[in-house]
Structure formats: C-alpha cells, structure tokens
Length: 394
Image 1 (cartoon, rainbow, N blue to C red):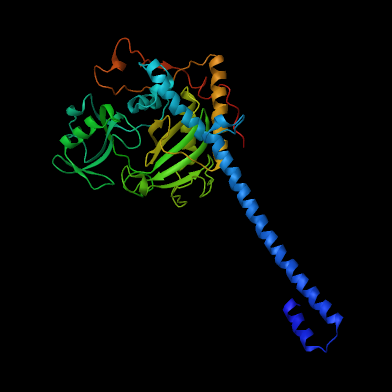
Image 2 (image 1 turned 120 degrees about the vertical axis):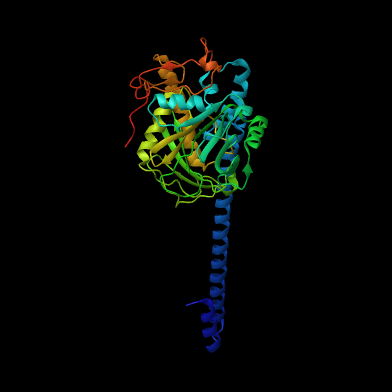
C-alpha cells in the first residue's frame, strides 16, 4: 500500500487525534526515506561512473605520458609510438639499412623473403627503375601498379584499361594516362623506386571491387589480432569497414577499436588457420618483435600483400586489448633476444625455397657486394619453427 492511499484512508476515518497525526507523520517519513534512498542510489551510480572515467583517463595518460608514472601497464600503442620514434633515430646511424627493421618497408624485398619460405606472392608483370620508364602497353586489362616503397595506399594504383593508354582507378573515379601515373609516382615523396606492376588478385568471396585486406598482427610467432578491412573507395579510409577477431576467429567486440566502423558481417578468410600459420611463420623469420602481415584471401589461397613494420593511424584499442597486445610485444622482444643468444642471426632470415630477385639491373641487390641487401638463409626447422617460442596454449 502506497503512502498516498494510506493518507486517503486516514482522511476518511473519524478524527483519531494523536494516533492519526503520528500515522501521517510515519507515512511522510517513509516517503522522505524512499526519496533519499533514490537520491543516494543516483549519487552512487554517478560516483561509480566518474570514478571509472577517471581510472580510464589515468590509464590512458599512463600510456600516452608514461614519464609521469613510476610503473605503467603494457601497451601496444606505446610500443608502436616508441618504434616510430626509434626508427627516426636509427636511420642516420644505418644509412645502408643493415638493421632488420630498416629492411622491411620494401615490397619486392618482402616478396622475395616470403617466397623463400614457400608463401605465395603476386605475379610480377614488369619492373622499372624510374617512373619515366614505366610502360603499361603490354600489361593485361586489369593490374596493380606499385612503388617499392610506400605505405597506406601511397604509390598503389589498382587499374583497369578502358581504352588505349587510358586507365580507370578501380574503386575510384579517376581516369589516368601512363604519363599521369608516371608523374604521380615521380612526385609523391612517400613513393620510392623502383616501380612495378603485379597481377590483380581475384578475391575468394566477391565483395568490393578492391580485395579485402586481411591484416594479421603478429609478435615473433604469436598472433594477437586479425583485422579484415573492406575498402569501397580506393585509398579512402573514411569509407572503410572493419572486423576484428583473435587468432581463432572470435570477434573482439564492436568497441575494440574506438571510432572504427565495425561490421561483423565481413567474412573471415578460409581456412583461417592457413592465414594464421603464414603470419606466425613470417613473423619468426623477421628479426623484429612485431610485424603486421597483410594477406589477401584469393581463389588460389593466401597471397602475401605486404609486411608492415609500423601500422599507421592512431592504433587505439580498448584498454584490455591494448594491454594484451603490449604484453605480447614485450614478451616477443625477450624471446627474440634469447634466440639471438642461442645463435640466431640478428637478420631477416630467408628460407630454402627458390625465390627470384625482381629488382632491375643496377639495383644494389644485384651487385657483387650487396651492402645491406645480403641474403641470410636458414633452415626453417631451426628458427621459424624452433627457438624459445613456447607451445601454443589450447
């Protein structure tokens, strides 16, 4: 019975003097207590919400400004920012790129390394030392034109011939001539020679015109995240859609990457285990604690897209996932060090499969003394499948 109904009954009763007044006072007191309990509940929820927000802000500050704290949790993003900074420090000390980290950004070099481990790579249709030498006349109707150096879609043109010396950018609305493409590649600071054309890959599950990117985050033999990206518009991330899973294909949640357009309907590559094994293998062949292995899911199976040393963008992830990937990076760094102590060359290791060198004549990799371009070969049974990497947990 509510306080309002009790008051109504009391008003209809004969005057009972003090008893009636006390009853009304008791009802009023109960109402006050209930109102105060509601207010206390709201305040407690507000305090809990603000406390949680403050904790998240402190944790974010610990990642972004670690110098303000005596101890900080592991962080993938912090490690990535440190890597970007340290690469800038390393470059002037290693102009011929002897360090493994400086050798990774070259696509044709990565194709050669991957092929030496038995990993499929795109068919190369032509290579040119200078942009002005590019000749597209004998290429198939559909192909991809790339620069050896370049990231984030810079220096990459998926093309379809629409008429003689007229090419449409697949997933875009531009029409370009050979001269236009030569000028673009010659003037883009982020696009480095040589330049090459490769076969356009046919996706296993047709979706957008541009094949889906399967980007696998790997830490010296251990995969921590699979990101599948669909690009309706070439080189335009504003329209990109994403799906994030772990190595078993379990979705990491729609909130794992704040600000990303997550689409759980994007199909995963099949069989996913084949893609994971490629990423694990190549990440053990490289002498770095982290690499992102970009693979395409084609009608012929997994085909390497590229190896990405330091993914661009903010790379912000939900706190628990950022910590998990940061811990994996820290552990991978020590496992690599232990393997080096055990005799692993501190080099990016090529496998035993035949792998052609697609660089043009006169390139440093073809010289008698290929300084910085030496091929260090090792049996995969020794390091790619061995070393200090613990057995996978079921």
